[in-house]
Image (tube, rainbow, N blue to C red; front, side, top):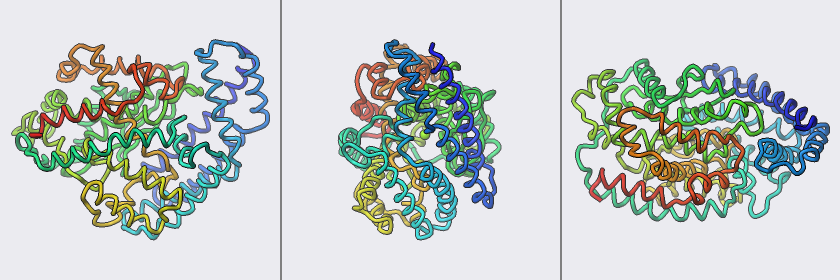
Length: 501
Ligand code: MG
């Protein structure tokens, strides 16, 4: 391959190393850093942002990219080199429009904003956080001005997380979901569960939960030689290379679900990163297709596998061994019903599969409204509560359980939430395709033999890294574009076995 491309790849790998160093600082900030460390950390991260931005948008880089494109003109458009150039061109044209000072300021501000949010959320003080959110919005609007947009400003933010996605397309998909979901929530609210489905509470010490969840995620195929788990307030997955992909989880003293399903969720993300081909590592095709595709992996393991009856049958002996009380008197069907209780609730991350996407639809509408100025930052809590009432029929008792619950807006990530629903929809669509290739996958799950499922995902999704956009990958793997019908059918079939609907 051309010598310019080789030099370009080396420069990009150097920038990649700095991004990875910043990711370690970010991981540390969200796990072990003492609260007092925030101001200095924000300076460290801002400096790294400035440095990488300057390196990436340098004139030399622009010339190198152009020369590489020229020397590679006419190569197979499906080759790795062509995909690398496509991804770099896209990021370069994007980054070069953003002034370095703005990139640096955005990094500094959002680090501080996250720190303020942590306390505002704990103390239920939206007014402390509001000025920071206001400034975030101002910085994002400046970015949108620099980057431009075709149809609406929200497209520009959405594109940062779901390459090439358009607001109108997302809206069209979401519109197909809202009514069926609201109807299903109502139907279930008026239905009787097929047996006891009350929560299985108990005394669950954190160290035992940690041991249990590590066993579970290792059995799924998360390689702990190249990963680890730590406790956090807001669970996430973070990789510094394909050989060091970490997950976090949260332990609730009297409930097992947050840690069990949180760990399974994050391990789904981690297994994606661990299984991207080694030769793609720290290159422009070494990421994911999109955040929506990333989320499909976490939701697949958390919900499609984890909240299924066959998985409950597999995991019950382990639960009984670790926590004889209360699990010795529990059977798999009882556990399955209890972890699939459907009820409108305030907190998105703890929502069941039926109500979950309504939480996302709410945020999608709010984000567009604050961006267009239809809702002011000051009036956001009120608008949030009204929307919760109309969609889920409940009003949060305070802002901690409402507008302050998620880290995303604090971290400057507006446009991110829709990818969660895209991930849910895709997980069901992938499951449908997988079932055509693997005979009786439920039996594999029941036996704890997860390798055929992971192999299928590796072959169909992970192996491609970020060579394809999600809109290219999904039809190749599933035979059609993203189709919400499969998710709705999955819910209908699953919940009619749990409730009399
Ligand atoms: Mg996730």
